Image (cartoon, rainbow, N blue to C red):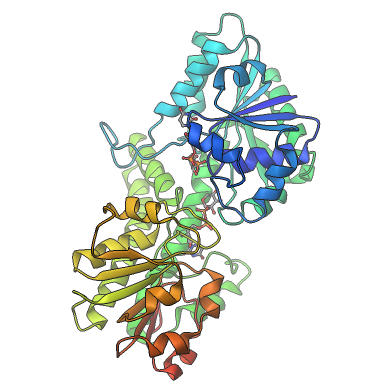
Amino acid sequence: MKICCIGAGYVGGPTMAMIAHKCKGHTVTVVDINQARIDAWNSETLPVFEPGLYDIVVGSRGTNLFFSTDVDTAIKEADIIFISVNTPTKTYGVGAGRAADLRYIEKCARKIAEVAEDDKIVVEKSTLPVRTAESIKRILESNSNGRKFQILSNPEFLAEGTAVEDLEAPDRVLIGGDQDPEGLVAIQTLVDVYAEWVPRKNILTTNLWSSELSKLTANAFLAQRISSINAISALCEETGANVDEVAHSIGTDSRIGPKFLKSSVGFGGSCFQKDILNLVYLCEHFGLPEVAAYWNSVVEMNDYQKHRFSRRVISTMFNTVSDKKIAVLGFAFKKDTNDTRESAAIYVCKDLLDEQANLAIYDPKVSVDQIRRDLDISEDNKYVSVCKDAYEACADAHAILVLTEWDEFKALDYKAIYEKMHLPAFLFDGRNLLDLAALEKIGFETRGIGKG
Ligand code: UDX
Ligand code: UDX
């Protein structure tokens, strides 16, 4: 079979690389309108950093995995077309700031209608509002000229940083489609692709709307757990409780479970906030303001947590960070990725820049240009420097902020770092990554999240 994927981003690229890796009998072509991104996928430096991804891409590239900007040909030749383009939060018009911007999805549907010469299975891979499949179907059917299109929803649950292992052994693959005979055939066709490596019992099939809604709900529940434990972290700081101990205690209850209870400076990433705001908008659209408010509070709590962290830094440092050098360790939204979308570090850095701090930022994977773009600053900005390693960032600093949980930050020589800092040497661990007792022994004045 020939498979095409429109959108060579964090989702489309790794997912298709895994399908090509596991299904040598199928040819997979990933297309994108962005020439630079396609060139990068065809180079030695992939545009997405994920542990294990390079080997999988190189193992299939040029054999049954291709990256191209020739969207039309790939669509024409494909039996199955995945749509994996971005669906950012709308910045204009009705629903601005909350609703998903579906213009790229619609463009893809129109492109498929324009160039397809025979029947196609069209798969929504991007996360979408419930009932988007209906619009895609309308666009395709009103331009069908006798061709038959089946729309499936197949949301992706991979998390960045662990994309390859998540794709290799997913908890589940979800496929939604029409429940009529043609729809069931289309569902089965996609089930057969995944069944080449995923146990059949882990492949769930549902109707279209359940599949679309399950993706938004999964992300909302995951984010809600983080906001819940972060809310408790604020109370821990007031009462002398330790949020990690509380999380461990409740996590041993098998009904609650231990995962996704790590209190932090706030969740980031391209999905959680976007998808919850999208859910909120949908609830309002369907006349459910109480449900909308409930889910919106998960995002509000996250905003509170990010700014609460900045405020704590400032108040601890004698209510002024002006002209003080602050080392920022970590800028990505989590470890093992170069992605900074919605990273808590962006918000914390902006808060501190508003207070005229001097920031020395180090992240093992995020580029200087990306940091400047995120902070909206030019090359000659005198308040921000991007450093080549953690030691350079920390030299002469008044405080260290750990904002991403990179493993290498655990192995730094903090004694040597301490000796080059201004005193009192503050360390704010926004990820509860480090052994604060050991750091206190060296002389640091430390603050963790949710540690009173
Ligand atoms: C993101 C989210 O992670 C995912 O949950 C959501 O459902 C879709 O957006 P991601 O792969 O991370 O997915 O997005 P991104 O890295 O921005 O990649 C999208 C790609 O689609 C870009 O490379 C863009 O150039 C491409 N694109 C966009 C097209 O090829 N054609 C278009 O019309 C629009
Ligand atoms: C998320 C979902 O996990 C994934 O299923 C979906 O497909 C896309 O959205 P992702 O955003 O890549 O994946 O990473 P995830 O591991 O979920 O982390 C999101 C954010 O939450 C990160 O900033 C992370 O640091 C934070 N987080 C996660 C916590 O603060 N505490 C936790 O316990 C877990």
